[in-house]
Amino acid sequence: MNQATDWAIDVRGLTKRYGPRTVVDHVDLQVRTGRICGFLGPNGSGKTTTIRMLCGLLTPDEGDGTCLGLDIRKQPLEIRRQVGYMTQKFGLYDDLSIRQNLDFVARLFELPERKRAVDAALERLGLVERQEQLAGSLSGGWKQRLSLASCLIHEPRLLLLDEPTAGVDPKARRDFWDEIHRLAAQGITVLVSTHYMDEAERCHELAYIAYGKTLARGTEREIIEASKLHVWAVEGEVSQLVEPLKKAPGVLSVAAFGNALHVAGQDDAQLESAIAPYREQQGLRWHRAEPNLEDVFISLIGQAQDNFAQGRPPEPAR
Ligand SMILES: Nc1ncnc2c1ncn2[C@@H]1O[C@H](COP(=O)(O)OP(=O)(O)OP(=O)(O)O)[C@@H](O)[C@H]1O
Image (cartoon, rainbow, N blue to C red; front, top):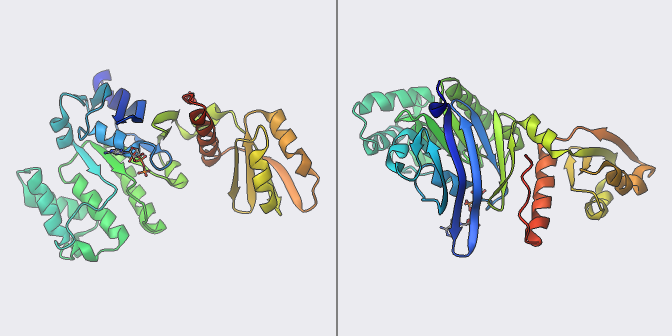
């Protein structure tokens, strides 16, 4: 594969402003063909806006690059023909059946062999037996499958999925992710936004943004290593520790994981001082722990909030 086609997404400096607000601020994103890239960040951090710029639905105010080797500024129509974009809202017709919805999408794409394309999409997502069911009567998991089927009908090479599993039960989410991995194995590239950490862990690589800026990029391991976080875990009567520890110098995040509380910071000595008053407290068991993605993201957003409040742009993790 040559370098020009190796990147399914290769954009630099993407910026979007609404009035005085910069909602996407010089975002760089590179995703190799056939990879699954998780796109994470708090609500309102600019994920949807970035995705819409990638598929030619929004023109960036600054920045440029390519999607599937096509120029995002000059070739938006060509990009849309080769990209499957799943929006956050169910965009299909409740009062049409599954088959009718897919046929409608096939018409929009002016597919030459519509019936074949619809049959293939039904088959691929296990929708054959339900094809006559009205979309409006489907549960969340089945609606999501139908949405994915409609994104795949024109055989796109890149999928842009915007929180595709929000509100879907764990079994349906797992099935969905199995399907995403099958698609990637066939060479389809996937950029998927999510708030779920278990889903982030199923991605080949991740990009984390907040306040429109990229704070971390890389594999899960790379992001955790770049964070340089130290973590202490404490079990027992932990509820009274949360608020004082959050305010302690050197503590970047305090988060509960099951029965344990994770207390994280970059400066190990400061972290030890922060927990020192509680180390000998009866009923508490302290031990060192490996940082996980959630520790890292909570710490990053905390640092970004501080920088934002002080008017300083946050430093990317790498
Ligand atoms: N058309 C618009 N006009 C003005 N502001 C907008 C517009 N579209 C988005 N925004 C603002 O831009 C910011 C980023 O929104 P965006 O939807 O891209 O975030 P997001 O990361 O996808 O959030 P979520 O996780 O909640 O979906 C938000 O503050 C939003 O209110």
